[in-house]
Image (cartoon, rainbow, N blue to C red; front, side, top):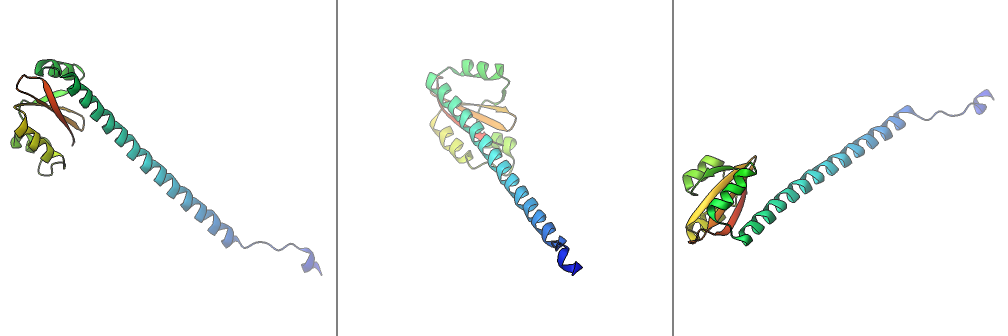
Length: 140
């Protein structure tokens, strides 16, 4: 009779299993959120630089004016021309996919300048009148 009055205890293994599963699901959700956040930040960062370069080319500054402006902002002038040796020096044996784009534009425009800052590389192309004509953005 005394056994009928004592409440039945839930098994401890079931509670531990539920708490463990909740922790795993929470950690997985956190990992997904952080991964998506990092991707979105990088996407936004690159799109801002692309927009910046597009606006710069639209204003068609001269070689000296564009160079002065970028170096004043902390960009380092890396090279005066975009030869394969320059690209090899910047990116090593594993260049980014957009290097082919740079090689195509290099054949089209007579003058180019290369600027680097952190992990980004700007390549500005200038026409025969030394006005900005095109650009490429590369990530190291």
